Length: 473
Ligand code: SAM
Image (tube, rainbow, N blue to C red; front, top):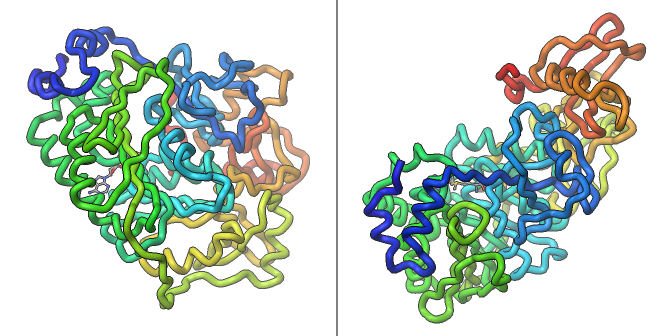
């Protein structure tokens, strides 16, 4: 499908647009595949890993604007890689990873921060943010569309970090948390032209009218959430659209509507990123696919110049209760947390958040619909914990819990082990020789996939139904 002529015409005046080169990259059929590793699961620089990451072994990250991004030589069948399901990496378009520069060049990430990712599903930016901030910082991942919020929750769960809260709210609901966040990321819903090369079907949905509609919606989203950003706080705005109305136009609108300071980023010339300037001192960064190794993307950072401090109101609602001594003693052996935890109960579920974030939960609960806070550890059945999947794939899980290894490093038949891992991930019946009884972790290449319960004569597969792989192959 050709790029719409009216889009091409509208881009004529935009910096570094080159019609021939732009059309050529869209017709070339070239596709770029990139992933971002989870530094809390895949350690070691240069990278050591198996599965689809194996060809990368020994290499350093090579997406230039992030420590964690890798281009892959081709697009593997990710769905059949057990390490994807273990949350070891996230499949993400390379240009989007520029978020890392926007955050780290503006913020001291060693400080405890409160960050809101407002338009977060399916979780690309949120999982990245979780790899950039320290473990005492809070990342609130929000998605307004319910079905998409569930996908977000799944991806955040697999990423395994305890310092997250997933919410399902409209942007305007955040206005009640006045001056609360240090950073707000708005990866706005947009007309999507930047992804035409990856998803040609999006070309059919593109129209000038939709660009207008998107820019109005973007204004509304920013205006709705603006009160929640504290004075001096950072707004990171991004789209995957080429249209000036959604990019430079939004910078202009922000500048005339709110008191902001533009933030300039240092970008290496060889990255191929285009810096645009609006109103002399606002800066935006454009990713043209004929100039960078990535898809179309735009990002701009602003500091909020005026605003007040956060004044916590008296919280009416606190739906959580602390664990009793006995309950805490039951969960303790399952945990090996790298940080101090706040353990609590929500309805029947036992949960864990970093201790440093304990006071934030009632504040958020008061104003938002929380889908998930921290890591779900499990439920109690008498004196026994029924462990939750989230615990198995979290960074809190005790590594000394009994486990079955589906691929001991360097031994066994890798194909057979992978088949077994896929059987597990499809939630099929497993046939294994396990002498002991009880809960066990299933491990693949040293990474937790989830739980089984060995009963002596058979094995129960506890992989969550809603996460299971449905496809054959
Ligand atoms: N940040 C995500 C990531 O990196 O994986 C991608 C976000 S996507 C570009 C924009 C998101 O905004 C979508 O999930 C969409 O459902 C959501 N959205 C749509 N309409 C919205 C609205 N009116 N307010 C807030 N978010 C909206």
